Length: 384
Image (cartoon, rainbow, N blue to C red; front, side, top):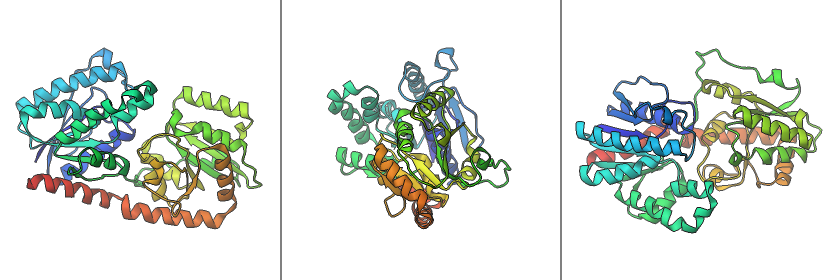
């Protein structure tokens, strides 16, 4: 089939949604479909047989578009809408596949073009707006009406997690839904880029590792405040990879103020292809997130690594894994410290959790599983 895929973000960049879209493109083209990707002006081109890339104009006022809502994002989305009209006029598509907020202009324009429409739901726009501007909670019903409308206008919805699927089922009980979770990154051993984490910590230290951005919802404040309360004779260090220079300086200052700078090492950003090699060197992988409903993409790579996962007991984690596969803690410093102590001091528990997490990832969050789920929904669309 001919597919118009609308991805309203810089592409390609090494971060969550663009990584997911790249996998989507590669898989659809592998199935034999032709994909026209409409995306922002920024990012690196990728080469995939069957893929053509179209970008919005490269105006100076939409450079360096940040994650989340902003004036630049609104302007870029406006030009996305203009380009959707242009492409629909020029080309005959079987399917419009709209990622995140692109569903709104796509659904409106599809009133006239009447193509099969896929809502690729990586997050809830209503939830994001309310989290960013708490005052909007007063009109949450109005915001959800827009998502409800978009879901009803769609032929099928592909949510990234169970929470979003349940939300769509509430909006539109008869809607065709296929949950399509993110997957783990596989190591590319042809690339000799393995960095030795041991050079940053003591020879006998257990290594706790966090990988990701350092935004407030990731729980880095909780991590640092929890480490203050950890009391163990087991030597350890917590290594944090990722984050902007500004965020790193902020959290370094906090660790210094609370008296635990010697327990934390901030290494900054690392290339995506190093991720699996870094994970396998850790003794404990940490996800202390405090907010959000979507499962963090990194968690799937955490699980697949075979290293025990230590995660906050919130819905974004527990919809993808349970206490049978990971060590959960309540999102407060006391529970963090108590459970981190237990994991540091119990090697058998670490081994058992690591094995269980890897089995879960292989059975539910592998590339094979991803391809089966995507093929199921696209076969259904093709048969309509």
